[in-house]
Image 1 (cartoon, rainbow over the protein chains, first blue to last red):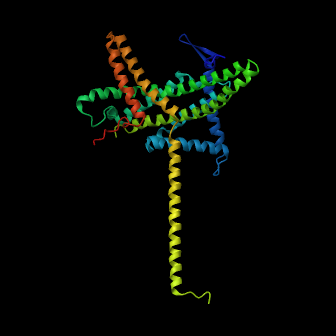
Image 2 (spheres, rainbow over the protein chains, first blue to last red):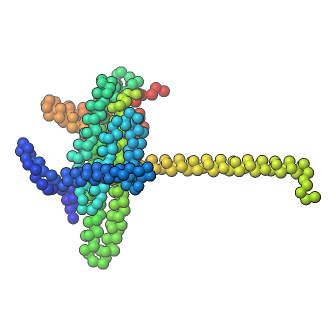
Length: 248
Length: 119
């Protein structure tokens, strides 16, 4: 009945110890492996027999490719396509993990902030490293809006720098908070059904309302699961755009 | 004779035909215009996220700025022993950055790196 219990990390297999830290395969890691396996296997199987007229599996893969490619081109420009593998990996990984979370009994990996923070840091470091490598010090122009009077420039630059460094926080918190809040809400309403159902006939009638809400919330959560993967990917594109064309 | 028409009738008929053609053309153009408008509305509605999504997005942007400001200020105070000035200054800066994030996310100001337009 505890709505938080579903987020428990449990050890499945202990691999060994490195420097006093235990290295083990947890349920979280297991689902990440499963997601990678499903994505890779799905892509390979669907594109094994490439035909001009795609069958169902192939057209799913092709539609996904076109969807992500269109997103990258639109937000980061044609030059952004060199980051297509990164964006596609993030999108498909998060999407599959979110969808895992929607299957009752399975574990929602993206409801743990450590996972989403790591993903956001991958993007953040890519932006910084590529930004400096591609533009040199011109990348710093990102923090200096042109046309601002000199006397407020130091304050503006400080705020812009802070705004830049707060990106991975909002980037990761958005995904994590949506999935966490959604799963807790779902669990709480589903818990009401069980609680009221134990009260007899009157309880059964009363349980209809939370049951209907649970069904509606499940539909909403499916939408959120897709939308958050999409939002994460599109934000990645927008941030990468800054690394490719700063200060234009 | 019945099928024999005077030149006047011929002229009237062709005028009516022309008028009819124009009306058909107008109606067609109008319908096409309406269809286009409907399609645009549809596209607009699809692009508009739900209110909850907007609320979550904007609040997370704002909170991220303030949190980062507080964190940096606290770390500086912790190591430099300047308590409470680091926290005060960086919380205020973080507040500014959070506000900046929100107005940017809402699309009210230009994105980071874009030049400020001079009116």
